[in-house]
Image 1 (cartoon, rainbow, N blue to C red):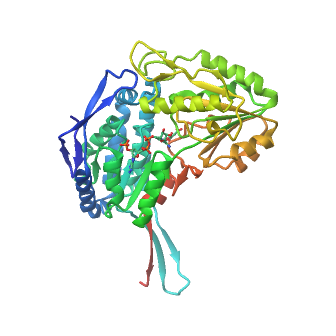
Image 2 (cartoon, rainbow, N blue to C red; image 1 turned 45 degrees about the vertical axis):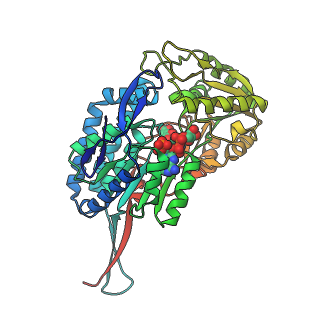
Length: 476
Ligand SMILES: NC(=O)C1=CN([C@@H]2O[C@H](COP(=O)(O)OP(=O)(O)OC[C@H]3O[C@@H](n4cnc5c(N)ncnc54)[C@H](OP(=O)(O)O)[C@@H]3O)[C@@H](O)[C@H]2O)C=CC1
Ligand SMILES: O=C(O)CCC(=O)C(=O)O
């Protein structure tokens, strides 16, 4: 059994959860200890006891630990990438790429420990000096989802530790493997006792225990809107800071003057790769009349050539859906879209392969309208819908007509339209001639409207969440 980590000790529990491979449900990736409320509370107490010491730790020590973690993750990319693909269902190439991204994130935040600067300002009062500095927030609870089992824990853990916070990590039940591996690496890299604690277990028990514990000073969460709302309420009750990354219904606008090859690449990669299980997925393809027919034909042609199959098999382009529950949700939305009058142009059926897994042919709907549920609610699977529009102005209006605002893309050769879209898309991230999904590790990540709440994640901007500002007035 892979144990919990509490106060520097590996702890086994009476029960363990089996981590099942979605490409082959007979394959048990591992057995992982299951925390209950008591273990979650012990983990918070350990993090609280370690907070003072870690806040005052040297920046060279923090740098060296994070750098050593980065080096080990990058050196083990093939093995950890395979683990990721086995537990989540991304293809081997996607699993390795995500592992590399996790390594790069630790390397970036190793550097951040050495770059954290304050400010010295003159005061309006003669003889007085002002200093602005940043201090850690304290105990941070990290609650992570299943769709990026390495990168999302990495982009929360690395800044939390770099900025001197102690951590209780609760990974998604479906994917404990990568989180466990990251924690093991960080622990062996030399983190003092209690600085990092890992509690695997059900969200409604372990996650809930973190929400209710007043010793938790901040919570960073990625996942569904429903759970995000619950976390925001709990944090407000405790006057605690929170950072929420939730869903998306990301538009990709394709204008008449787009390069058709680039537009098709962006649509197929953005909507269907990683099995469409990305909050940045291009689930709404908003296409102007002059290119609509050619675009739909070319996307369907590309989908016809893609192989859906076992994540670790050579030649697989799209792995399985993560589990039975998510598959049922995808199929429900396919049925809803049909009933609403959408035309299923390609895919949408459950596929049988040589191993028992959750395989779904990527689904492309055409003739959909902005008000349909398929265009308003997040499916979180390999399902995209095309909305036909007259011109750029209508495309922009439709793109912004959503309760979400994470990522928005446009394919065009017009500098004027690209520039206007960049300014007017109501989204936290804008992509021009690029897929809406797939971001760099060193720049801010996050959205607007119902997609995100609180300060940005990643890059130097992560300090806004993981530090608190102190203004000191000095009369020497
Ligand atoms: N924006 C994104 O990146 C993601 C969006 N989603 C969306 O959410 C849908 C459902 O996925 P699901 O995994 O259930 O998402 P959840 O929001 O339920 O899960 C995300 C994380 O929150 C935890 N959690 C669940 N309930 C609570 C609670 N009461 N208190 C504290 N933590 C809790 C989960 O734990 P546990 O796993 O143990 O339940 C998991 O670690 C998907 O179909 C998709 O639409 C999902 C994942 C990522
Ligand atoms: O598109 C990406 O690279 C990141 C997506 C993401 O963070 C998510 O789906 O939760």
